[in-house]
Image (cartoon, rainbow, N blue to C red; front, side, top):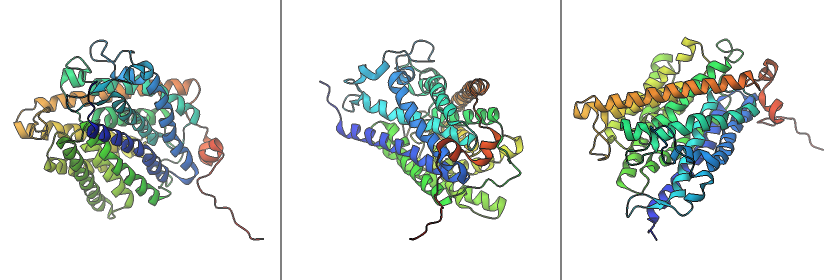
Length: 422
C-alpha cells in the first residue's frame, strides 16, 4: 500500500477547512454591506451555495471538472460519479502522496465560494428559489468546464489552459476570480438596476460585520493560496507570505487612493482593499517573490478602487462590487504573473516579461484571462436570461422596496421590539 505523507495530508485538510470558512466570512462581509431589510437573504445566498454545490459536487461536478479529459482539454468524463472510485485512491509525487478525497474536498471549497461571490452583484433583488436553481446550473455549465481548463493538469493531456496553452494560475485567478467577476457582470445586466440606484443612498448597514467578514476572508485566504501548493513545503510558505504582503499592501493603497479622490479613508475602503489584494495575488502567489507580491498588491488596490466606479459610468448595478474587485483584481493578478513570475520561486513555473525580457508568458496569461471571462459572461448571461423568462429571477418592485428578509424568510436580522417588564 502507498505510504501517505501525513504532514502534506494534514495541510491539505486544514486548507480545505480554511477555504470553507471563507464562505461564512463572505456571508458576513456581504450581509453587512447591504441594507438591513435584506441582510439575512444576502447571507442565505452564501449558505445556499454551500449546500447545493456540495451535493452536485459529489454526484457529478467533481468528475466533470477533474475527471480524465474527453478531448481537446474542455471537460472531464464521468468516471468519478458519486466519488466511489476516489475512496482508496492517492495523489501526489512519491514521498508526498495524500488521499485523493483530501483533494476532492479542497477543490469543493473553491467551487462553493466562487458561486457565492456572484450573489454580491445582485443583492436586494433576487428570488431565493431561482437562486438555488441558478447555483446548480452555473456550477455544472460554467464552473466545472473552467476548473477543468485551468486546474485539471493530466501530464499534458488535461485542461487546455494548464496543459496545452501553458498559462500559469497558482490558486484560481481564472477559475475563481475572473470567472466570478465576468459572471457577476452578466447577472447585473440581466437583472437590471435596483430601484433607487444612483438616486438613493445604499450604504452598508453594519460596518463592524463587514470588517469581521473581511478578516475571516483574509484568514481563510491562507488556505486558498498556500493550500494550493498541495503540501507543507517551501512553496506553501512562499505563497502564504506573498498572500499576507499583497493583501496588506492593497488595503493601504486603496486607502491612499480613496483619501486622494474623496478626502476620507473609510472602513469599507480598507476592507475592500484587503480583498482586492488577496484576489490579485491569488494566481501569482506561487510564482513571484515577496517584492513581486508587494508590487501586485500596490497596483491591485489602486486599480480595483478605480474599477468599482465603472458601474456608475456604464450604468450597471453591481451591488457589492464583484466586477471591480474580483474580475479586475483577478486580471491584475494574471498580468502580474506574466510580468513578474520567476523560476527562482517555482521551477515548475516560468519567467515573466520583467524577469526574462520575453512577452511569451504574458500573452498566455492574457489569452487564459480573456477566454475565461468571455465564456463565463456568455454562459452566465444565457442561464440568467433563461431563468428570467421561465420561472422569473427578480422579485417584484413591492417586495424589493419592503425588503427580502420578511417576505422570503419570515425573519429579520435584528429584533428591535420594545421589551416590557411585568
